[in-house]
Length: 332
Image (cartoon, rainbow, N blue to C red; front, side, top):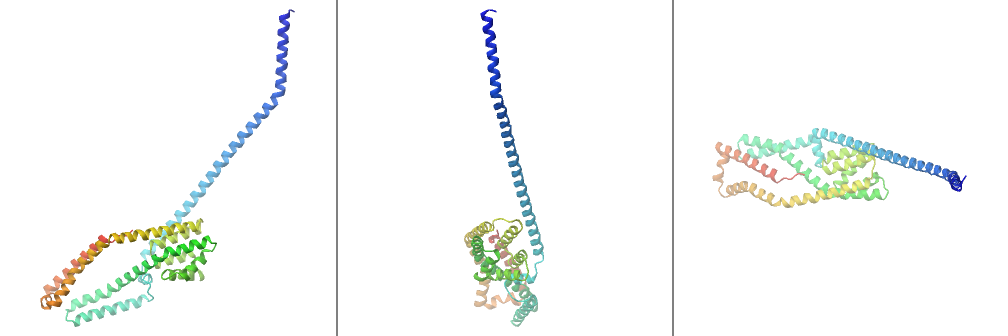
């Protein structure tokens, strides 16, 4: 063998030797690194799967809660529609804050109508005029009085209701139960808020649930604000949630509605004043003419043609007043 051949063989043997040594030294570490990489990938994949599963569970819980809230709202809307259809004279008297029975109200209305018609008959009016005025006084004026008292009571309720909600919010944040907060409002708030919450608290003492008590409160005070309050408490009882935050937001909404109502009244005050002036001119002029020259105006009451003209004028005047009221009445 020559020198070159020997050198090549030695180089090949050295390469094989170093390759074997490298395989023995580095192969286990490479295998361990591969196992580590596989474990890391498995952990990452497991974390992704767990995160995806958790996200799916949260989405399912949210969807279930939303479905429960929607069902609760549908039930409340259905119950409210049924109760609106069953509006009776007893409910109207309760909403006005009067403590009389429907039978006594009907008797007093009839007596007032008879008295008014009898006074007109004694003043020399024809019997049919007195008879028509008697029915109008018996059916119209008492109902108008109920509407007036109801509107005044509801306005007083709205003035104090937002403050009552703030009492509940502060009480819940301080750790008081909702029942104790309602008792505080019943003791400290002015009427009609205090009386309404007193009815709610007294009802709970005899076994009426909070939901049923709130429904009865809404019957006595059919306002959108009371409806919001009932929905918040009903949903919180059935599905849970942060009651103080929900009632705090509701309090802010009620104050915003009150501010908007005040702005609307201020903006429509000019139109209301104009409507009042226009509506009061015909009876005012008629009264002045009757005082100054009664013989001139008595023809409307003594002659049949005058009676027809008087009835027609009253009908047209009532139509105009109702149209103006519809134009300046803003409901929201």
